[in-house]
Image (cartoon, rainbow, N blue to C red; front, top):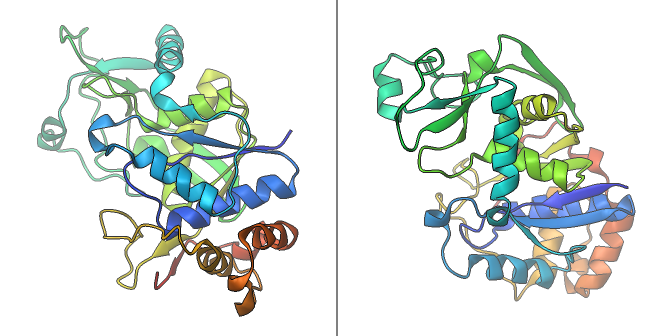
Length: 299
């Protein structure tokens, strides 16, 4: 069965860009007569204000985006992530790392490709076993190209060794890395297609690589164009994106549908939310935004 998901991090309220991604994944699942799951990616407690999860869920409900089954929370899946690390350790694919970002920079690490930060120079890869009480855990990568065909952005490829080098799957503070958690969760939940923002496009090869090494079925990927503010910055809390106004869901939905290139009439903003959603399920086309990585909005 087709299974999609929306997986917000509870670092603040949803904004317009979040709504676009949630709506696209919801409509795709409903068109496919499949399941649409909501997963709260609460892996970084210091960045998660109290009450953010409730606000996010309230926004989804206000906009008619009702999920299937129970909510899931990454904070409750630590045993699964640790089990995956143990499997990778037994296969010789991970190693402990005590390097700080400063040490990596001081070692002369070069900036990697695709905006993934400094290329890890492999300092701890061949080092003796560390005596640190809390080392990070890094995933070994090879000098090989990961290729995939994104449903919206087309053929993509990335050589992990040149883009980032061995990457962290558990930090030194004990928090699990996004790449590991999202890969394990998608496999556990049987996700068949991942629809998310194009800002995560360059992260996808890591997820595919981890899936391959863990023996998981790799889902299809479709990266929707990112909403930018008038200054060309991704809508985000960091760049001052406004929280969704849940008191005007119809207007928000119409704007999001226009972003997704659906032929929306102005009078639809006066329709009940349920009618807008029904119309959108019938008329949605994933291909309408093919090849678009970003769009500016005044929202």
